[in-house]
Image 1 (cartoon, rainbow, N blue to C red):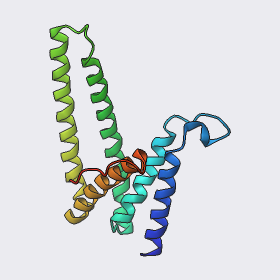
Image 2: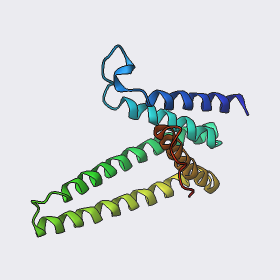
Image 3: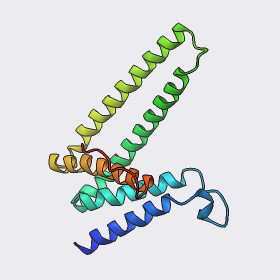
Length: 161
């Protein structure tokens, strides 16, 4: 294993283990800053993806800003979808409001698909198709690893893709 890969893997492990600590353990009983754990996970994800992809310096400089923009937009769409689903469970909604809720859900899902397609087109200008495939696999593997670590040692292994 290369030294860089070892450093990145160690950093990932430390960040993930730190993310499991209670919020008050991050500093003399004070709660963690809002988004602190998200930032930790984002940093760990970047380290994980970096260890999986072989990016030239030029590719990395062009890829990471584009990827971070994509992730931010995807996160916002996912947040909107979650809020919409939460609102759909309100028993006080009329039939018209429920219909509007479904219409908005379809719109958000279309926006998510459009975002994915746009990102794929833009990413192809920076990465090879093989690197894109490795990126998508690395994202899935990272999510599985986080879920595995959060679930703890006695949890059942995640299902294969």
